[in-house]
Image 1 (cartoon, helix red, strand yellow):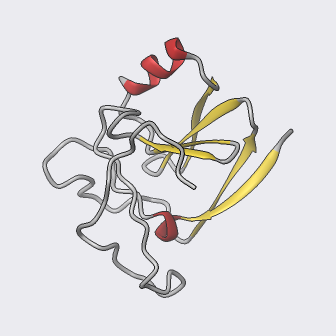
Image 2 (cartoon, one colour):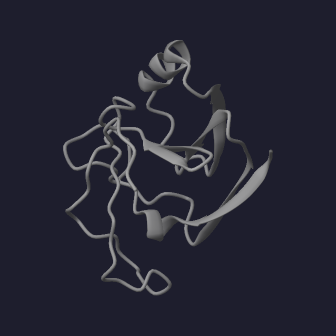
Length: 126
């Protein structure tokens, strides 16, 4: 089953995966709205804000493929069905993180918050 998901990059508020103590330090070429196509329930689709595009896929629940992607820093987030992972924490060695923010209007947000990001962990959040 193929899906197309539109994601407003500010709504997800992913911290970048580049090296350094402060996370992403540049201005990503992707702003506003992005579309990630080719999504399915049986494979991870990896996206890079730096490149502004999908950088690969892997089989869902493949320990071998998950380990290979965890060593890479050329992706920021991945989607598989209803699941999301960031390149940081349990899913990768990057500095990616996620922030759930219900206080801002993402249509007018110009600067991402500087703190409050969390690395992903292996669990299902309801």
